[in-house]
Length: 198
Image 1: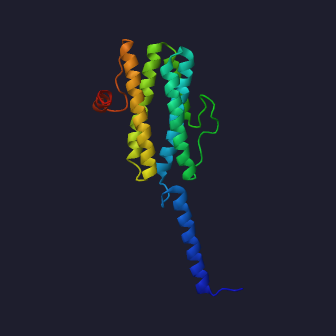
Image 2 (image 1 turned 45 degrees about the horizontal axis):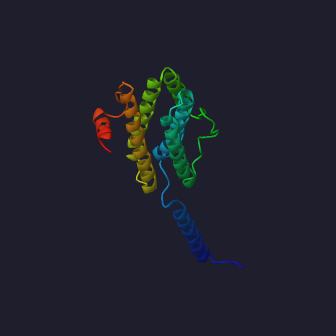
Image 3 (image 1 turned 90 degrees about the vertical axis):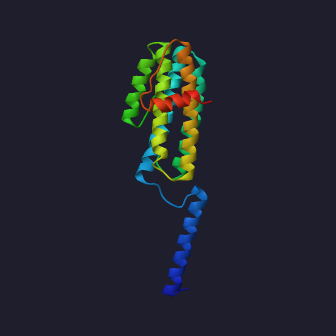
């Protein structure tokens, strides 16, 4: 059966509408992501894995619960970003989930430097923990400002809250060990506000 051109045009519009509607059901969003948003999700997928891997390695080295406990939380963080990658059809940068394996050469180098520093002493390891959370908070602040997608903002917000909790935990241990840490990535004012909040 042949359809007149006008009917074919109407059918095409209906099919397109159904496709868009199906996409809304899957994603909760009707627009595609920009390059900054995509790059941000890719970065956070591996950056949260970096935190997990560093803490797993230092936890095995020093046998201190704070590292193994927070590593479990970081696993939920990287998993949460993976949900967003799948939702938006973005290729996962984590090709190998083994400890210390990264697609990003920058994160690979950062992992090795952080582990080397953390192997010096337990206090140095705790300072590495504070450093990782400091960086994480800075990146999450910046990436949140680059998107208007509610699901991404919500996920980044949960990750940021977790990183602030982790930073407070590491700072308690650093202080108890007689050490100190000066923020390298967020401002001193934000750092002080995080430590003073519950």
